[in-house]
Image (cartoon, rainbow, N blue to C red; front, side, top):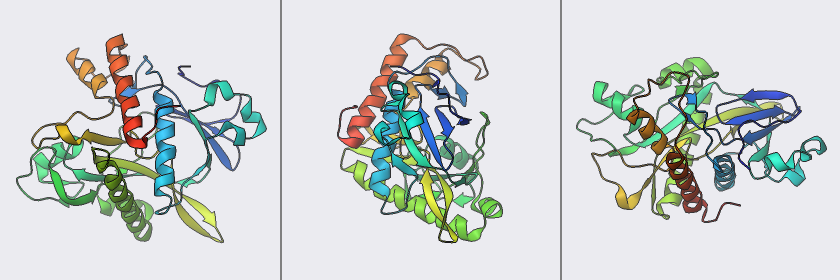
Length: 298
């Protein structure tokens, strides 16, 4: 079943570009829809199975990274959900997770191992990204000497996230927490990079969200939302990677390319997508799922 917006009679916590999040008291129900956004605008056309891909890839990575940092995932099985949620099984099976509700940091923790995307644009102007000075003469998509941490503000309501310096992050969340978030983010990136390298993929960059959970009178950092999906990360095919180019990534690049080809001005209303673009994008998401997890989408 393709899903645009879930129709669940529970308190809505937040409706993001892709996920509908419901408030269950101390827990949250996160439902990944088949919506797709481009240039921070949600398109009217759905990508079948996209929500399932994002949800199940996140669950895979939460398991892979739990030795580095705890995460919010309680279960992805509807059978484990509260009784008032189970009756919506047809809508949410395969595309939902039950998570712990936490105090969320207003920061996106971005790690870049390669110079690409917005990082490449900034580097060409200043030879730095988010205040991090980089060597001269780098080419587009070149591997960096070591992964860099380049945070961004987390904006709600469709606003564009803003890249910020580490110093600015410290002014928002404090020095100790900023350093911990940076170190955890890079550890996850390095671990995930090794895993996907064995599968013929390159993890170019990614972004995470974290929250604080009260534990024994203190607060513990935990990983939340999604983790290392094609929507939050840039995965490249090793065999096709070439420095000086913009490699095709396992995400919505077909959609972005199409929208640019019709010269859409990147303001609402967004145009509908032709079936060929929908099917090619769906194929990429499904391929990403299989390559990353080693399984077929259930």
